[in-house]
Structures are given as C-alpha cells and as structure tokens.
Length: 273
Image 1 (spheres, rainbow, N blue to C red):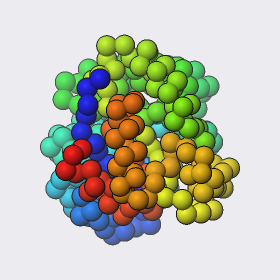
Image 2: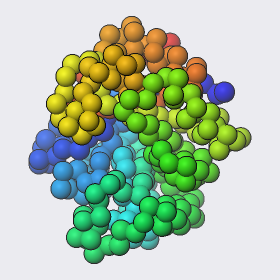
Image 3: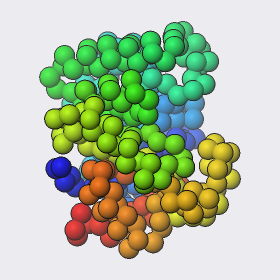
Image 4: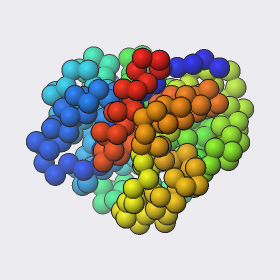
C-alpha cells in the first residue's frame, strides 16, 4: 500500500453573508488546514458562487465541494464552471460530486430538475463524470459513498474517495468496508486518496449532531466509533497513524465547529506525517 501524506479539511455548510464566508476561509488557512469544502447548498446559497470568493481571499488553501448534487445541475454547464475554477485558482479547486442526499428531491424540483430513483441518479452521475473527463484540464474528483453501486463507481473513477460509513461504525466493522472497496478498486486502490469525514473531534455532547444522527458524541466516543477522533493530539496522532497503516486513510475532514482541535492534531502530525 502506498503511504500518502495526511491532509486535513473543513466541511462548511453555513454562510450568512459574504464577509462571514471569506473570514472563515482566511481562518481555515491561518490555522494551517489544507482544504475548505462547501456543502450543497451552503445554507440556501450556491456553493459554486461561494467557492471563488474563498479562493480570492486565500493563497494556499484548496477549495472544494462536499459534495455537489449532480441532479441539481446540467453536466455541460457544470463542466464549464469547474474547468474555469480549476484554471483560475491554479489547480486549487477539487470537485466533490454525489447523487444528492435524502430529502433533496424537493430542492431539485424547485430548480426545475428531475430527482430520479437512486439507481438512475447513480447512472446519470456516471454519465456526468464521463463528460467531465473529456476535458484534459480538470479538477481532481472526489466521490463519497456507502452503497455498492456508488462505491463501484468511485472505485472506477474517483481520485479521492470518502467512505460513508454509519455513525456507530467501529474499527473492526470498518475493516470489511475497506477490504470490500479494495477488492472493487483492484490495481487502482493505491492511486486513490482515501478519506474519512468525521462527525466530531472529542467527546463533548453535541445536541445538533445527536438530532441528525440519532446518537450523541459521548456514546460514539465510548463505542470507539471511527466517526469520532480523540481530542488529545497525541492520542489522535496514534489513531490516525493506525488508520493510515491499516486502511490507507490519509485525508480527514470534519465540520467547521471542530476546526481548532483538528488543526492542533494536524500540527502534531506535521513532523512525521
């Protein structure tokens, strides 16, 4: 297995105004983190409108999406937008694509777009990716998935893959998920950057997370869930080194509320990561 350097990023889903968004981008870069990823939508805003603003006020930070809902957009227009972002940012843009989260159908219909069955959306996403890859100069592609069809597509096409496991997933349960993906990817496995999108860093209660996942952070931490990273930088460093050795996971993201502890963990790994 090829050992890749660690990367650390923030998934941002809140932008009340342009100043708050650009201030956040500056802060993430100042903390020394590697990426700022916009959700789709960001609150009620279009991520591809906000990403260029973040690029304009930073110089090192990689900007991306986590993840754009393919059903919301026309593939040809998307190709124009992302190739432009790739070019004008000097390669600092990474494209995360997906089929739309549960409940996104109403938003798609508001845009005048069809929101088909999961299987049909995955097939359409494959067509979009094929279209995007016709352009030689394109951003790196991130796909996130947990189901077999989405993981198979990611294994064939993605540069970066986020394994979307359930909140309570333990390390022993993650073994079979990674092994299955390894089998799907075959010889491509070593070239793919594997990522985990954390629910939290540390074990403090987080009612908003509990409302979304059905389980609060202290219980996840007590169970040893791979969706929660210890806040202690030394313990977190050991955990991440083990995950990289065991599974090849080297890219770690979490929501913006955990930017400072994630940055401290990243600094603890900077010398040897």
